[in-house]
Amino acid sequence: MTEKKVIIETGWNLDNSYARLPESFFTRQRPTPVPSPKLIVLNHPLAASLGLNLKELESNDGAAVFAGNQIPEGALPIAEAYAGHQFGHFTMLGDGRAVLLGEQITPKGNRFDIQLKGSGKTLYSRGGDGRAALGPMLREYIISEAMYALDIPTTRSLAVVTTGQSIMRETEQPGAILTRIAASHLRVGTFQYASNFTTTQELGALADYALKRHFPEVDASESRYLSLLQEVVKRQAILIAKWQLVGFIHGVMNTDNMTISGETIDFGPCAFMDTYDPATVFSSIDRHGRYAYGNQPHIALWNLARFAETLLPLLHDNEDQAVKLAQDAISDFDELYHSNWLAGMRAKLGIFNEEPQDESLIEELLRMMHKYGADYTNTFRGLTFEKLEDTVLFGTTEFTQWYELWQARLGRQQEPKASAQQLMQKSNPAVIPRNHRVEEALEAAVKHGDYSIMERLLDVLSCPYAHSAKQAEYATLPEKSERPYRTFCGT
Ligand code: AMP
Ligand code: MG
Image (tube, rainbow, N blue to C red; front, side, top):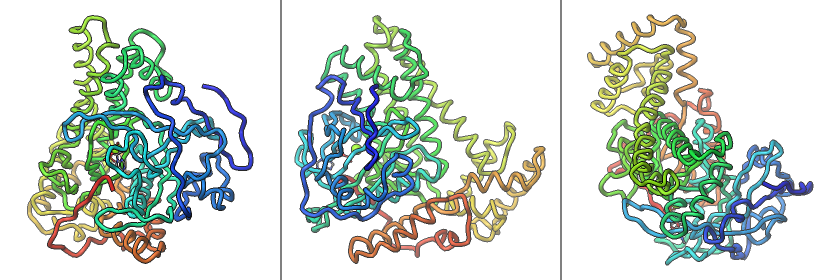
């Protein structure tokens, strides 16, 4: 991939390797200019790590770039083509309201996609207006950055600008554009597009591109496409285990929202679970619980099977052999997911070594949490700081018995109690983006132009394992409401 001259003043150092793929994978598309861009939020640490000049980004020129009114030098704006299974149904998709400006090569030599989301119509917009509303873009900013701070692979948010244009949703909303940063925007859906709408040769070009970009350690042997499948299975197993461990519910795990890099992408209807219940669903359109918390590992596997299908022509000339290779690779998912989840759960309970009964100890805790409607995050937080009265389980005989078993288990490892407690602090967040806190921040921002609540929220979410005094109030639960929390996508 070619080197470009670094442009000192702005820091943009863009390459366009995706645009060197066969033309069927994208269309050239400039963002549609907007009347009056205004910078709402800028991610300073992220901008610095990308090698961008903060002063420049905070100026009018910066806002113009984030709004798509000015194209930075070296950019080659395109909309990516992809397809995908949405709630199990296959359809042609593509960036319907996003434009990839290019790939920023950072001072450390890493490559990140710079994408404007809400930047106007493209060839793939179907009936949509190509735009995005301020509330949902700020929501993506808050939750994606919270995920990053929780140490979960994720696309990130560099900036949000308002456009000066109103857009119509259920009501009129201020229009906004989010600048999304991603290891790439390659999705399972990109491969489904290649497999259904291009040639085997072009599919091979895409697979080689994905290997070079995300798995450069895989050598160029004939079995490299099998390695690609195995590596994506591994990354997704790690990712979904991390989601489960913090109670993150993605909400719309369609195959176009599953990355090859293993990053979380698309924060439309996602939300964090409060009361532990595997059946938890927040998305208003997920009527049958396809994407419920407890179903996420199963759906990830289903999506990976769709990915594997696209690779069959590359895996082996003999179709039966290809299917066998794909099935073997896919069947690794359950074990990979489970071992990552179990390791994470052990850490959440301060356990360093392995005993066969650990899993039943964990399952018993989860069973009680479900039975008594315990808050997922706060239960682990209560256990970490031995503030058992903070958990609704406290006082039940079942819990007392479990607690003794757990204490005995901690006593059977070499590490002292203090080390176990440190491990628990690192593994159990003090804060998550609780739904009522996120809503409160968005309401102040969108309705009243008051960004101070969001800024405070972003601040406490930026170090979730700090367990600092200022985070304590963010652990409180909302007043019980009559209606369950609901989220929406495509907004
Ligand atoms: P999502 O549910 O965000 O994964 O989006 C599914 C598809 O709908 C993607 O191809 C999006 O680009 C497209 N899309 C979502 N909202 C809009 C919009 N307002 N205008 C055009 N396309 C959209
Ligand atoms: Mg999407």
